[in-house]
Image (cartoon, rainbow, N blue to C red):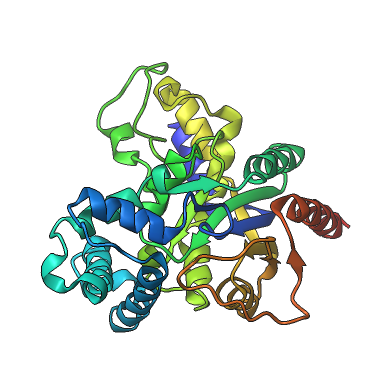
Amino acid sequence: MGKLRDVFHALANPRMVPSFIITLDALGTLYKFREPISKQYINVAQKCGVHDRLDPAALDKAFRSSFKHYNAEYPNYGKGRLEGPEEWWTKVVNQAFSELIGQDKVPKKLGTKLYHHFSSGAAYKLYPDVQPFLQSIRALKDRYGQSGGPLVLTGIVTNSDPRVRLVLQDLGLQVGPSEPVRFAVRSMFARAPAPNEPMPMVFEGFYNPRNDFDFLWTSYESGHEKPDARIWRSAKHSMLPMMPFARSEASYAASTELSQRSAFEAMRQGLDLTLDPRNLMWIHIGDDFKRDYVGAKKEGLNALLLKRDEVSTLLHKDDAIDDEAETVTSLTEATMVLNMMAQDHFREVQS
């Protein structure tokens, strides 16, 4: 009972720790289309039996128009109004192709085929600066990773449906949870296991110190799209409270290796900490001025606008930029800014 008593004591008397939170957008920031969108549309359409000659520019224009129409009629990929994102995207696809070849020539399976094509790494590729950026952030986490010390957390906040997780994983990135995780306390008390018996259910799907991003928060799961401040607010209330529990990495092993004793100790270590709201600095990085930069700023976050030296192909991209916006041209440049900000933030907190 002593271990259990320690857990409840930690829960009732957590220690406040300062934190530095880094979130990024996904498409246009971490990865881009592997080939022009219209070319991918045409390739998939041909495999589905479309033999008409399709002009890429005309198809691109039709898709932009269809996307805008359905985003207005069914915001946030039809969340709460349609059966799911696949139905929303199928409507976009059918209307766009109907404008060019007529509704009767649009294959019934085209929407589904395109939906699944853009759910994988076959449609996208990482920007070259992503892996070096992640290595630098791992080093930053290690620098402040001592037990009981400040927290450096990473996440993704993006206007997307849940497929973004599949894309990120297919591109070789490891991503943490997308919703509050309820660790399996009941499984710990269902019976009395031996002290060294593994308890695989306690941390399953919760935390992995090898994750590239500690959490993923999409507009679909949030219910709000950037630049609506509620997407960051909901991430703060839903995802951040469980992040200190991840500090159990000090005693983390593969979940199947955690004994009852070490599971209790890991739980105690994690619950012993909570984010100090007075000493929390959050910076968001994205390539869309209105959605990423202005949206984050309105919620009181710091922000960096990523202006890559290439023409955007995103359907929703807003290129209007305020001259006073804080910008970087690459994630490599962002890394230097983040390191200085984290150092200054934690030094100020400790002074």
